[in-house]
Length: 258
Length: 221
Image (tube, each protein chain N blue to C red):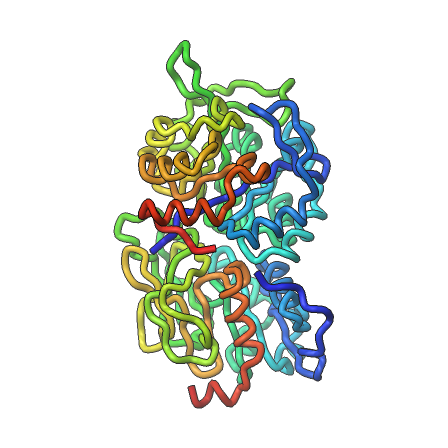
């Protein structure tokens, strides 16, 4: 049976793994390659490396680390940040990444999604969506340039319209980052993820809010997501992956043993 | 995960392993996986080097159409079809070993190498989400030297929307909505639908089994 995926996300800035709270105040967690290796050995099912500076600075991710990661790990990994063209994507895939994830550049030019899917296959094109719940209007809105607080801006897209759009263009997977929950460890946004689940028939990855092992079982059981992404609970050692998988298995959730 | 072995003499005993440069994107991850096991390997589209190799790895991602165009333009079709040493295809590489692949929105039929007499069709996921992406278990495992130490319920990493149906060439199967071939084999040609290079220790085990194969074993398998 297809296992639910546990996906540590490593936010990268200037070649170091960092973590901020609600996208702010980034603190350095450590070097990329040893952390990647540690997670692969600990039983992570996949890794995401997100260069949070890239889109906002208008520069492409520093690529040398992609190939250094590919050398040492034997699980799939995805690279996000600043991929704006087929040639950017090709370089990263050539260095050994399994998937590329695009976010702000897809909002600027949605046809990029179909061009990448056509060129490299739908299976390696992930679309990351940063979604913010506006309590005043009761709507979920897509945000752009979230890597840089000064440039972060609301787009004209509502989250579920954008999900339907990117799937129609050939996205192979969606990572929905719920910004209100990011870094605060109060649980995934089940309501939003349920609606996202209903809006797409490609793999959906939950992001933002993981704080306890129950948060993971809730998001798999209630929102039926294919994978759950988290950063701080893993980086800070709050939840060891082996314990998380044993717990999920006890909850009758299909996971790959560590 | 596999530990990096120091520069080992495996592979430097004169045996040559090559990865066919199909012009597709995931060559480095395959190369690194082989090197982590301590084997030498080179990436090439040189016809003579491929013909002389002891083991040939045939990777690929993307569309069968693009890949077959690349292989045709490189003049590799006949070379690949007539290889007699063990050949291991990964993912799209496996699909290209079949007679044809149906793909794209209009399901056009792409003629492939035809070294394993089966075909590739859209995966009948019966309403499950596509692509079939993630870690899934094997449902049947035949007795084959490349599968030494591999068992039913072992997890491997799959990413695909197309698959070869179960046939007499299936040596391992997987289920996602319906059963399909996880590994197919005929004579010296072996193809994995999943990505052994991204399937942790068990994936490495399959690569190692392949690289340590005595080609005589395949003839009696």
